[in-house]
Image 1 (cartoon, one colour):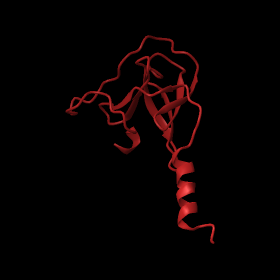
Image 2 (cartoon, one colour):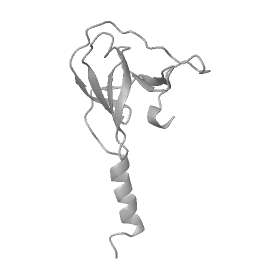
Image 3 (cartoon, helix red, strand yellow):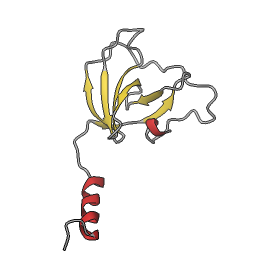
Image 4 (cartoon, one colour):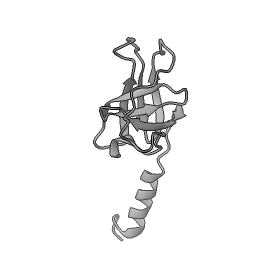
Length: 116
């Protein structure tokens, strides 16, 4: 029996697909800015612009949408639609970004924004 037979491959796939990890909260949703950038919305209605993302996993790095205007230092890391790390505290109330008016559905999307 080879290590790469069908039953072993199925077992390996189940381990990968059912990966368990700690997280802080689930992401409320995603949308796009008027410039087409991905925007994450957390459970407290703060908005984050994508800063960087992994090409090999579902990990993404975000920063508060008020980073430039209000010097808000908050950064966030997401993985599989879950927040796994938040650094710092917001120095403002939630302020929504300019959402694209070309979109038919302005509601939050629950799927990954990097593959919209």
